[in-house]
Image (cartoon, rainbow, N blue to C red):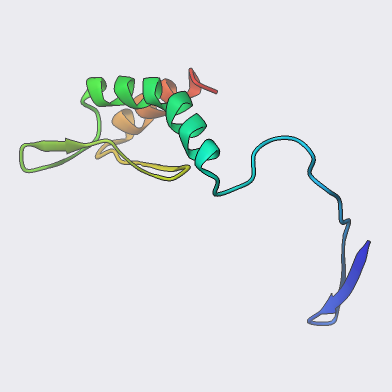
Length: 88
């Protein structure tokens, strides 16, 4: 256990070893993430809900293992959330 004081408050962390899963930042993690997320991204792109800039619709941006979703209205936001919830 690691104990420290910061701004006059006592904090502690329990140190443990991770023995399963993939290390963050590894190529395997990126490949698995892209395999898992590809169906979701395809469904989002085919829904045409998102933020329109000119004649283009932007629904999501993906980088490594993060996704940002865009929508221009509250109903569009809810539609995107409903799609994402199916992949939970």
